[in-house]
Image (cartoon, rainbow, N blue to C red):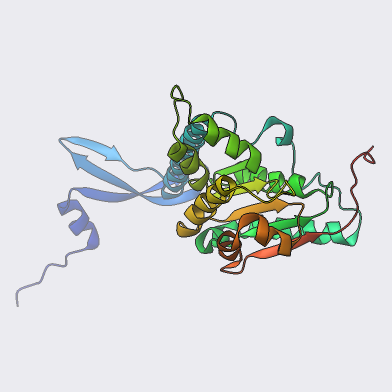
Length: 269
């Protein structure tokens, strides 16, 4: 009777140009090391766990570089920092929550940041509305800062007044930016915090309404969330922004967080 030869997995590996041998990693212990034959040379494989860690580190660096480049590009478009210097130190942690209303507002803003990955997919907007000096701007800037520090998201804080002024400046023939450039820089970020909406008690101008709609609708179409801050009540905000803007903010579960307590400005130690 003719004997049959048994082909082992090692034979298959050797035929394919590599073999596996036992090895030891000082960080992860024993592992099977792959040794590949290439042009008469042996290339010895690394510990799989070390290789995984190195790959993760390279990916993290790539994402960090990409995020930095995106933020620098956006900052150049806006002509200044993404978050103004005055609000650069605003965080959720240093917001003073001394009563139930403040604690509820802080909790909601904290959850909004924590769930931002989901919020970014749905474009869910947030409106911080109520009295002057109640911490709305602090929380709005804090959310933007938190996202910039802990995620790859881009976030921009702007007042309506500064946006209108920037657009008017583009009408100068010597301007290096166009109105479209300004609008794009506000539509592009992962999160836009738009403050001082409806700050004037007068009838909003057609220019203001048109600009607000261009920004809100542009972000709405791209499903990008917007945080709107105003001293107005919800019913007044509808008038100050226009029906179309307000409806887009509310669509998809947009939420109003009321700030109904008295101003704490001048009472901080």
